[in-house]
Length: 164
Ligand SMILES: Nc1nc2c(c(=O)[nH]1)N[C@H]1C(S)=C(S)[C@@H](COP(=O)(O)O)O[C@H]1N2
Ligand SMILES: [Mo]
Image 1 (cartoon, rainbow, N blue to C red):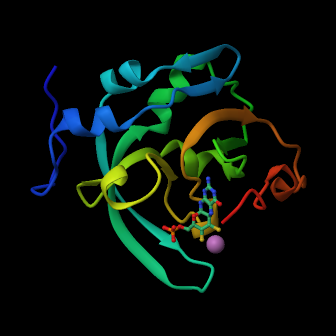
Image 2: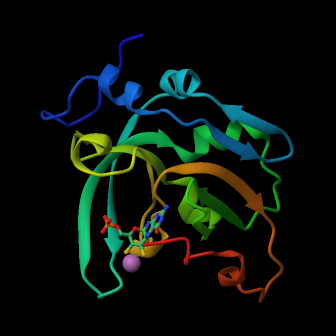
């Protein structure tokens, strides 16, 4: 199946993006599913612009290309009461993101049309609107919907000390 990334004249072909993905992504919803690299390659790739807020307060707007988080979650039946997503990286890094923001996000494999493997030392990155830089987890391997009670602090589910 031939697909195209919208609005990205510099985008290298889809095949190159897909071949860059070596690691499956596990989705732990009501069902547990593992989406293998070939299955990831069969999901639509979308191009979306996000503003990422750095720790320093700087803001960067880039156009990211990747697999919509929603498309991944739909494979695993996400409970209606979900409030947050735990997004875990292969290095043990873990972030806890408000589900409303996360569902509009991508597991990106390219930035501004350039495959991440070509411009960085990671192959995927979780990105969503307004997400602070430290919460854009690289090399995503697991996504788990969680239902936090009102007033519960999402930060306690996170692990930032994996490395930087
Ligand atoms: N898996 C993983 N993702 C990560 C990190 C990490 O250590 N591991 N560091 C985070 C932090 S603290 C920042 S500021 C950004 C850095 O992104 P950059 O390399 O594009 O500057 O990635 C974030 N994503
Ligand atoms: Mo950071």
